[in-house]
Image 1 (tube, helix red, strand yellow):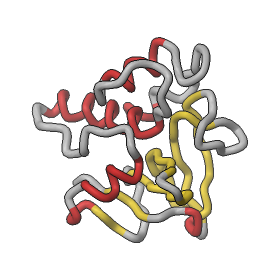
Image 2 (cartoon, rainbow, N blue to C red):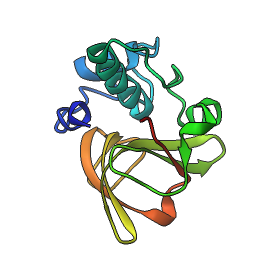
Image 3 (cartoon, rainbow, N blue to C red):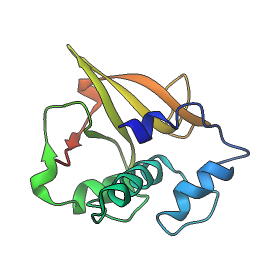
Image 4 (cartoon, rainbow, N blue to C red):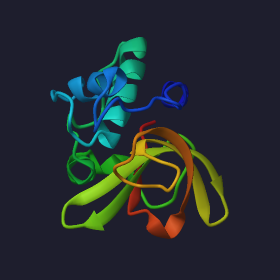
Length: 143
């Protein structure tokens, strides 16, 4: 979670681009110009995995719903815990993701990329946000 939190304040330099954004996208094999919320999460888990000397347990993809559909089922949960990856499903193959930093009643606190102060799924940077539990499809928990 510390790796994700260290990215708060990163901003795009153009549409889905910029030095940090390209770094996130490169971790999943893409260049600039793509939606990058899942790339940020994959990159952060990659950094942590490298530090621990283990393989990244996530699917190498920028697709939020592909991650949800292909990740090991033992990692899927319906209730949140700090450190979980949250998954949002907007239909028609679109989604959004980030990491849970707190759980409070009917909402979660998060850190997420490619969003903004309004909570867009295609924003301009890495922000801390609050999301309602009712807006979340599920959680990926790597322990």
